[in-house]
Image (tube, rainbow, N blue to C red):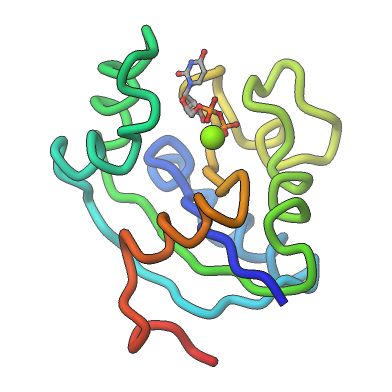
Length: 138
Ligand code: UDP
Ligand code: MG
C-alpha cells in the first residue's frame, strides 16, 4: 500500500470540477484517506513548491496556487503514486493523453487542474506538509 498527495488546483475548483475529479478518483479504485479545502497563503505555496524555487515559473506558480481555494487529499492504494500520475496526465494539458484529468480539465501548462506527488519521498513530505497522522483515516 502506498499513499500520495493530490491537489485539485485553483483553476479546477474555480471552474466547478471538484465533483468530477473526485468521481474519477473513486472510479479508479484509489481510496480517499484525508480531504480538506484550503486557500493557501503565498508563503504556504512558496514552501510547498520550494523544490522549484530556482525555476523560471516559480513566482507565477506560487501566485496561481494561492489565487483561490484548493482541495487537498491523501490517496491510498497499491502503486498509488504512479496510478495517480497516470490519471493526471502530462504536465502540459496539450500533451496529456485523452481521458486524463489534465487533458479534460486543465487550461495550460501552469493551470493544469491537479497536482500529484512524484516519488515516495516527496509523497511523504507533501502528505506531512498538509496533514497530521490524526487527519488520515486508516
Ligand atoms: N509549471 C509551470 N510551467 C512549466 C512547468 C510547470 O507553470 O513549464 C507548473 C505546473 O502547474 C506544474 C507545477 O509547476 O504542475 C510543478 O511542475 P512539475 O514539473 O513538478 O510538474 P508536475 O509534477 O505537476 O507534472
Ligand atoms: Mg511535480
